[in-house]
Amino acid sequence: MRELTVVLPTYNERENIERIVEAILRQPLDLGVLVVDDNSPDGTGEIADRIAAADDRVEVLHREGKGGLGTAYRAGFRYALERGAQYCFEIDADFSHNPDDIPRLYAAASEADAAVGSRYIKGGGAPDWSFYRWLISRGGNLYTKVVARTRTVDTTSGFRCYSRRVLEAIPLDRVTSQGYAFQIEMTFVAEALGFHIVEVPIIFVDRKGGESKMDSDIFWEGLKVVWGLRRKYRDLEPIA
Image (cartoon, rainbow, N blue to C red; front, side, top):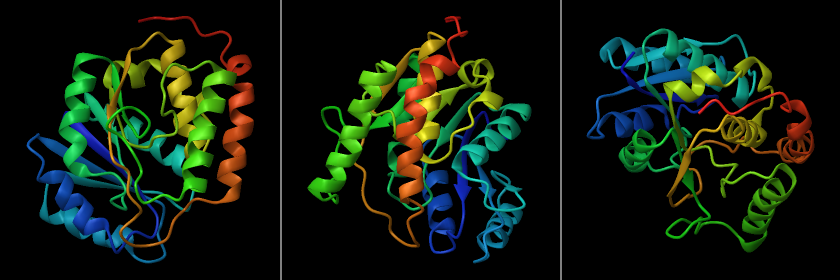
């Protein structure tokens, strides 16, 4: 693994996998890519294997089935850390996040402890969204801020960079949420441990191919998880 590793969870992303890996690897950083594939029925994992066979910067972690975003990232983080990664990135495989923003996230994280690509600070946005979709997302983040008392504005963003010290300190076995709730829970725990999270403005766009994994269960899980975070992690003390 490279010291800078992009963890890329996939499920039925055959339309995007080759292009997204190529876009990540052409960034002006010594990046590696870890594809975490949940046994995609469309053959995404096999395509990823072919990419990895041709480029030693790419590795593939195959999982038995669709286990959810949170478990995919936990598995990917552990795999990368065990093999020497110093920074781990999160990014969607569908081009809703711009790989060209990876260097900005790394620069911010290297000056702090972690960086989040934010849609809700000056310079960020989601221009493809309807007002209703924006309202749901923005409202969910405000709800998290009020209930869980987080400082980060865009707690549901899935475009991130974590330093090794943050991921080693977070008790990943206890972060059991899936979907966007996983991002909320990771944010809450990192802040509770005293780590400095910097937000970097990004433009979020609708996916370029494949089908969205978002559904009502993911939305409702996020609402429920927020209520329990302060109780679940009441034993945590700042270490940073």
